[in-house]
Length: 79
Image (cartoon, rainbow, N blue to C red; front, top):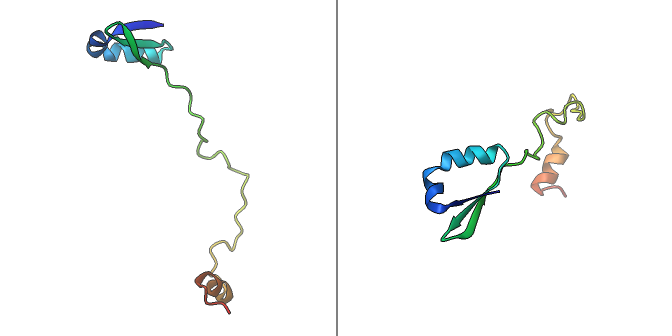
């Protein structure tokens, strides 16, 4: 872990970001007291586009018009 004074961090931010991206943890201190840390970003845990490929089935009539009864039920006019 590297500790850098705030003034130096302001002047060398780009270099410090590169070091953090390389895996180092940089602590930024103000008046000798740790105030913040610059840490590497972990890998995204979000799902990747296309991750469900082959797992979903869309019926051939997916975009067919709805029946009058079903439309009435959605509109609340079904008796």
